[in-house]
Length: 124
View 1 (cartoon, rainbow, N blue to C red):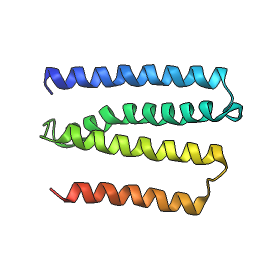
View 2: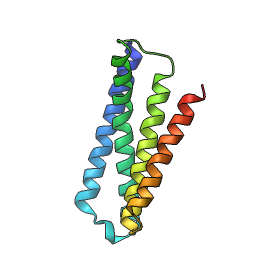
View 3: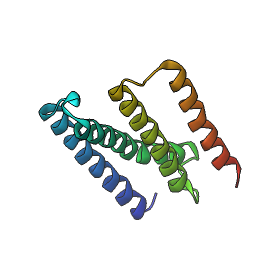
């Protein structure tokens, strides 16, 4: 791991901590049924917080798994997987807030995200 990877990890963890703090502020001061703004802000902040937290963790997992070798494209793969997870979480929160969440719909969205990731991973 070089200096740039360390700074990227620390920077992403700092942005994740800031996003989690903003989400905590939103949870303490607003109620989701007050309006669509609080619901949308909560969904976006939760998706961003999870994505920003997972990004460096996924990269570190691939780094450790590859015997401490940073492969080319590992950051892009980790960012893609983290953003896809954040998008799925945001969709779930929005659907739950609108009363449209159901298990069959979740069982369609999650395999779609897995298929998107498999397609993007296997194309290279």
